[in-house]
Every structure is written in C-alpha cells, then in structure tokens.
Length: 318
Ligand SMILES: [Zn+2]
Ligand SMILES: [Zn+2]
View 1: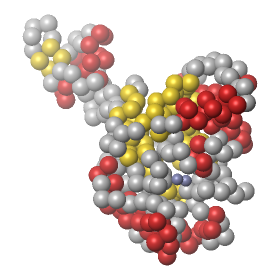
View 2: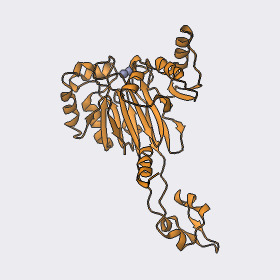
View 3: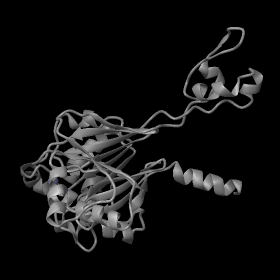
View 4: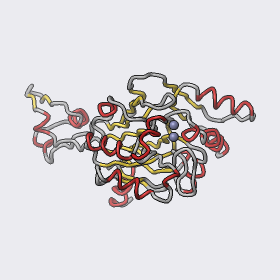
C-alpha cells in the first residue's frame, strides 16, 4: 500500500463527522425526513435518533447500516424512533450477527418487543437495551477514544440530548528524543499518554521535555427536542459543535414554550454564550418549508455562522 493511500485511509478513519439522514420536525417532507443522523468518531459508527423511514435514508445517502455499533434515541416521540423496528428487521434480513446497543428512555425495549411479537419477527443478532431514566447528566458509554454523556432536556416527555466527548489524544514524541535519552520502546506508550520517564540512573525526565502538546480533543453535542432552561448552558459547556433543534421562529415563542421546543433566536443566543465553533440547526418545521431562509436569518442575526442542516449532507467536527 502506498504511503499516500495509507495516510488517506488513516485520515478518513480518524475523522469526527456527522451525516444528516433526517432534519424535519413531526411530519416528513420530500426535502426533510425525520430526525436521524450518523455520527462517525475515529472508526466507530453510531446513529442518533431514528425517525420513520431512516433505513431508506441509509440507502439514499450511501451510509453503512451494518457498521452501526450504537444507537442513541433522545425520546419516545414518533418522529425520533418509529424508524427502529424496520431498521432492526432489515439488519436481520441482510444477515447481521454482530450485537448492537441502543440507549433510550425507559420503555423502548417493551415497545419493540411488542411490535416484533405481534408480527412474529425475530432477530438473529443480540440487541442490548440500555434504558435511561435519570434526571441528572450521566456518563453512559466509555469507548477507547471517546465517552458519551446524557444531557437531560426539558420536553413534554422524558428526553435526553447526548454529548460525545473525545478523550485526550496521545502526545507526539519530540523528534530524536528517544535516541538522545536512550528511551526503550516499552516506555513510549505511557510517555505519549503524559507520563514522565525515569532512566536507569534514576533521573526523572519531565514529560514536557519529551513530548509536544497533544492535538485538541473535540466535543459534539446533540440537543433535540427541548425548551430552553437555566442549566442548559452549563450542561453544554465545552461544546465545539452544537446540533440543536430550532423548531420555531421567535414570532411563535409562546407555541415553542407550550410545546417545549426552542426558537432559532433562542438557540443562537445559547450558541453565542457557549462560544461554539459551529452551530447546526435542525428539526425544522414544515411550516417554514418555503421560507427557511427567514429562520436561518433569525439565527444568523445573533450567531453569524449558524447553518441549517440538509438531509444527505455531512458536517465535519474536525
Ligand atoms: Zn421531534
Ligand atoms: Zn419531541
């Protein structure tokens, strides 16, 4: 394998990126299917929410259904999970045998089991249900290179957003330093993780002498659906890229409050306070389908680089 091909594959695997499969609210349109997105973090594929028709979006936008390791469901409104029975059933029919883990509010396992028993459907692979009911933020997943925390949201049913947080990356060893200090191969890994090195004479070499600073670790936060509340900013701290629902324009603030959703202006204000690098707006109501530019302009009036996501488009976290 050529060196350039190796680095191209390495860069592809090491990326952190989302691909939007659905970004509409409540009712699908020809332009926006219901909430679903694939998140790739350094070789691990995950699905966040699974609105009706999500399996077709996998085909349409050439995403790999069988590579999914985890599914995260924010809440049990139909536009966020009614795509699951069909998606799981298709995974089975396409020959899946590897397990999958689904994080969701309590009740999903019962719902899917009832659905499958009524239609005499069974799966040839294990589904591990991790059902959530805590009202506090909690760490729910610890992978080699990242961890996942819940963000308890304020919606008309129990609802969590999810924070995907990369762990600190390895520090590069300074050029020529291993030969200079005669550092054995077995010590390299711990030095890259930040440890000092003690040589055979007992001299301690500080880590800063041996290494360069690690590359930045990124945090992607997914918030849907929710009204705004005081603690939200603190829960989302350290977010680099924020995906947030913007179901309404601010002229419908009262409706947003009564249905426990957010307006584009409120989300822009939150992003401004958080000083995120990138704000992605989704869960767009079909009432704006002919005037989405107004919704975007409202958000951009406070946060100039705000973007309305589009189905089928990928967005790099880095
Ligand atoms: Zn929704
Ligand atoms: Zn909802």
